[in-house]
Image (tube, rainbow, N blue to C red; front, top):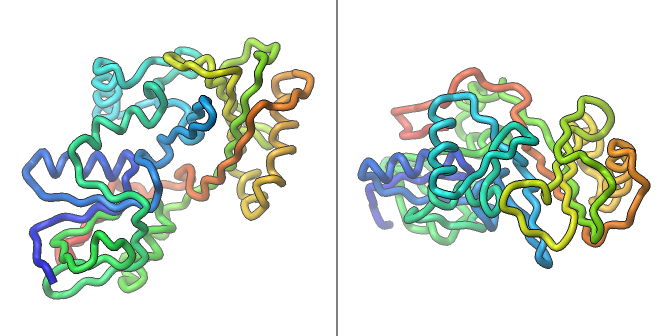
Length: 285
C-alpha cells in the first residue's frame, strides 16, 4: 500500500472545510471525503427548474469573533449579504456560495461515504471510498454529526463514550414555490409553537432571482422527531397546512414542492468542548 504524509478529513460541511483550509494553508496535505453530492453540509441550496432554496441553514447569525470575521470577509468578497429581515447573513447566490471559496483548491471527494475505519502501525485506512483505497493517512479528522462519528468510532468504545453526551435533533424541511406572490408581508418568522419552527421567504433574500414566490418551511425538532420515519409525501400536507395557517393565507397549490429530511440538523445538546484529540491514534473529532 502507498504510504503518504496526509491528513484525511471526513465531512465537507463548514467545519470540515474550515479545518482542511487551515491545515492546507499551513503546508499540510489534506484529502476530504463526504457522502453527499455537494459541499457545505446544511449550508446547502436545492435547485430545480430555475428555483433555488436554501433548505438547510436559512441564515447565519455569528456570535464568535472568528465566525463573524469569516462572514464579514465573505460579504466583502461578494459571497454573502446581510439579510435584515432575518437578522443575519445569507450566501450568494445561495447559502452554499459561502463555502465555495473555502473549498477552492482543496482535494475533495464527494459521494464518497466512509463506512469504516482501520488504524494500523502505518496509519489510518478508510473503508468505502474507492479514492481512499490503498492509502495510509497519518491523521484523521471527523467533522460529521455525533451519531455518524459514533458509528465510525465503534472499535474505540472509550471515544464513543466521550462524545455520547452530545445530542442532535432532526428537521423536516419543505420547499414550495408559487407563481403568484402570496398576500402577506412576512419574509421571515421564527415560531415556537405548532409543527413549524422557521418560515423563510427565499424571494425576499438579497441577490435572489427566482421564477416565482419561493419559501422554505422548517419543522420543529419535536415534530420532526415524531414524524422522522414518515414518507416524504406524508409530511407535505400537514406542513403546508400549518404554513398557510401561520401566514393567515388561503391555501394555494404550489407550482413546485419538495421536502428534505435532515436527520442531524441541529445540536440539541453540545458536548461542551470544541473538539476531542487523541494524539496516540492521530485522531481528532
